[in-house]
Image (cartoon, rainbow, N blue to C red; front, side, top):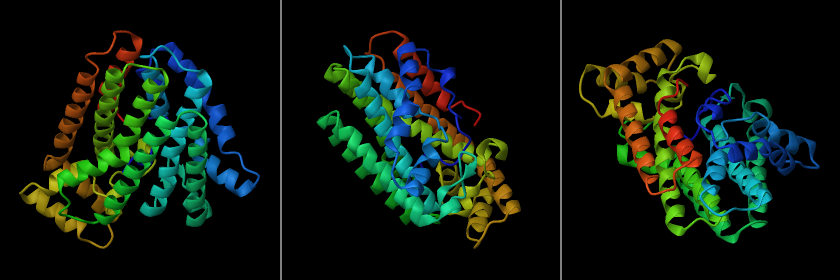
Length: 335
């Protein structure tokens, strides 16, 4: 569920990030990531660098750097190490996600499991996870413990998602639980970790954590919507591809919980063994016609509003403004 395949940089940092210290820290992140995935084994190094070198949205590190602005300060090296660790935890989950989903593309390029097989992709994901833990243990015990809980949540969410593959009766509350574990947990970790490392007051750490959780839920709801409506040139895959794999996002579940000819036809389509391009296109149209797109969009906007509300008690300035802009942007981005 988290971060379906798409074009690198679809969350354009420049559209919402105006806090120069955070932007400056982002420029130093790639070097730390590149160093973290080095290995004496050339095959492992190449596989692990596949997604790291492919760029990505870098939203989680940016959140960490912005959250750090609400405290007296932290060592640049510590912020970069922990931000790199959080990004590697995310990358590790993507490798394992792609194997489980049998994904063929990620960020507009072939996945490692397609290029080199499932075994190498899983090993690369485990390697990225191990490197992340090593970086965390070099910096802070509290953040390491938080990261452990986040990864446990992510694993549970992944298992729940796998258990509900092709489940036409998947409940919306179960979907929300999966989204909280698979996506929101790392968003919350990023915000809490940055604020904690910088010595922010406990109430601000909590407020930023709540913001991150709501933002992650908004992000996932918007991502699920884009999987149905965004053009193939933007996604790097045909809209509705997740339908064929039985991974039903929020718009699909909303549609399936409606009554009427569009919902009935959608159920009929999804019961087929394999959806061809024409069936995928029709399914996407039925989802829109039955209110799935508008319903999911409304939920995404509600989560974004909740995220901004959690910022109310924080000091005014560029960091707070950037976080508020991001919450609005994730639910309005075109892809």
